[in-house]
Image 1 (cartoon, rainbow, N blue to C red):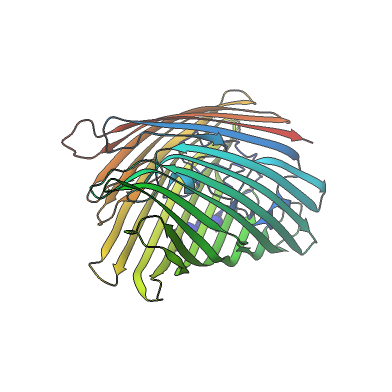
Image 2 (tube, rainbow, N blue to C red; image 1 turned 60 degrees about the horizontal axis):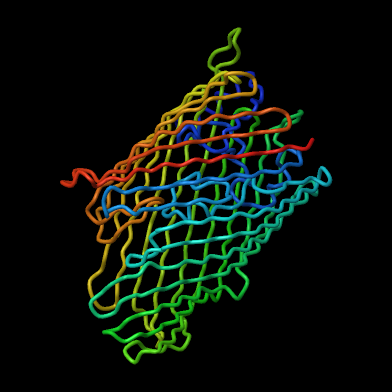
Length: 507
């Protein structure tokens, strides 16, 4: 990624580039072209990466945004889950890959709720969302019969000139009901879990104009800091049948401390180049307590059960420059790339303080996209990405288990503006997930068993409308994940979904 990609932004400075009007494709109905399309939710800026100080740099239109997706998976065999999810949320997928359905919808709030600008220097956002899911894998042995999550956000930012301060709080509540599990010794009759989380975040950005003019290139340096406020805990309740005798177990997992912080660098050359470098460190410690009505399951006084340290690095680049100027307009080449590396270690302790498990993990993701755009006419693009997840869970007694997942995906799609206000969009995505490890690996909509490969092809279609006061986007998708080379012809599932997004702008 060093020499070829960095030369292109420099070459673009030799061309007379004019800022392009953003392609409003907020529900991604082109099949995952976030590195190609210039969409308000895929722009490389502090706001889209969760820094609350970036709110004040959005276009200063008071607005209301609402988005509602619905998804359903119907399996032909038991190797896939029958799953459904719906809600009032910005989306069911992240810009980058996600490991689970809940994580895929747990990104920072983007355009959701009210965004208001009381003054040109001050911005404010308030929003909330809801998610309901069924049959989402919870752990290696438990499945959520139902899952309900609600979130509330308050965010504000003020631009003091050379520096900008931002702050937000995010409250969320998650409630799950477990599916019954039958085993020889103990049967799970019913179970549920609930958790409440309140996390405030502060952000700081210092802006430097790199040139004079109406739309100068801007370098922004800063960072963000998040800390969970107590009490942050998850309460789990189990109704069991142990060899014919009813029993109850209540487990409380408390997060004693959580911090996430790190530096951020953003570079914007309007109309030609966007880049971001982020590195965030995370520290978490948690405790565990348990009460039981059965003599065969111990009562456990709360104790320090483990700690986790993590580091997340991401570098994201997007550039564009004209390749042909004609009577129809300016034909531009659009390209982008990203690299994300997550690493972490989790140590598990017993009640005496001895280490019982060590979990080391590393996740590398990379992607590249390229396409062509004739403004307000058409855009076509191709994007490819890969993910390599490795790790080892080492118990103090017993054999180590390895995680080894390799995935890649290809997306081809585009949009065509039928009128100045109406656009039609189409895309197709192919994904290949291979699990070469000892543990099941969870993807957003299915679990990849050890030694298995799952391939899927998804077709997306959509349409959008845009005028000076109203934006609307509709996306429909259909896909079939299949267990590759399975002797059972029914080892596949059918995925269908729809998402509608509405925005009202108050100038």
